[in-house]
Image 1: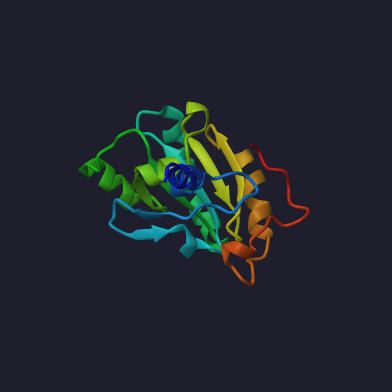
Image 2 (image 1 turned 90 degrees about the horizontal axis):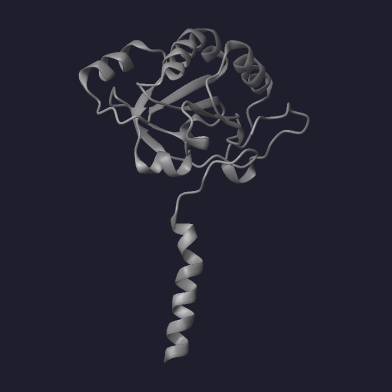
Length: 186
């Protein structure tokens, strides 16, 4: 009986890591998640397959985050027509107050509040906000870095990905980085 119990406990220990959400890693399929925005829209990452997506982890108290937030808002009208979007996830403990909801109505991309699913799948890198993850059209993480984008770096990362064709079969099982694409920052 004791040996059966040991085997069962060992099996649970081996299965335990699978219960945790996958973490986003460069050159790996992006973990899916569902987010409810401050404007009450529901978005899941799988529905954005075929687009280039930035997942932006930011905080209202972070000055570089606010500057980058404005950069994304100015950038969206120029690149969204080519399949680019940003999902901004506020990580600093904002509570969805009216000022945050009003901000979410003004910008050109969805804004959501953090929850444990986002924190596990798309962690803040090196305790740095903002942290950005860029996911290509095939659903593969191509960039992950703490620190705010400046326009030149944003263009260097995003434009080559926008030039790539959307996958014929956008399922994550068949997604892989395209050969010959630019190096990604880690």
